Image (tube, rainbow, N blue to C red; front, top):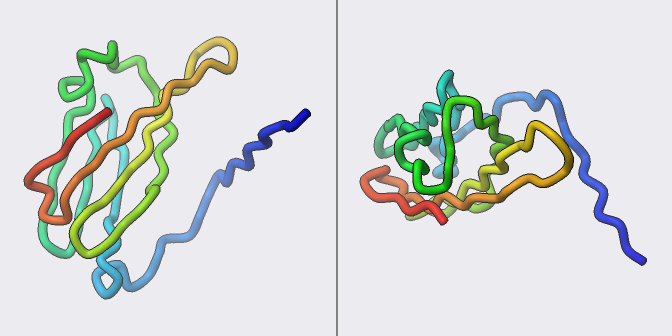
Length: 105
């Protein structure tokens, strides 16, 4: 039998040289406002509005991870933290570096 163990880092120092490596700066603000800054642009995405078909609201809390980055695209994983139990849902945010287009699945 295999067990999946998750390690959570409560604080991680900011990355340096974001622009040199095309890395985004990502912050979750109040009311699920996702603020993303890349070397090419800056944008705030209202996750409550963008994910309303998934039942996301102000009460939804997320664990956010940058899954992949290249010169053209960013993939973020948003884990909706359940208030009770261990049933968390994963959502993937695919967004271009210019922040002009995104898809959530």
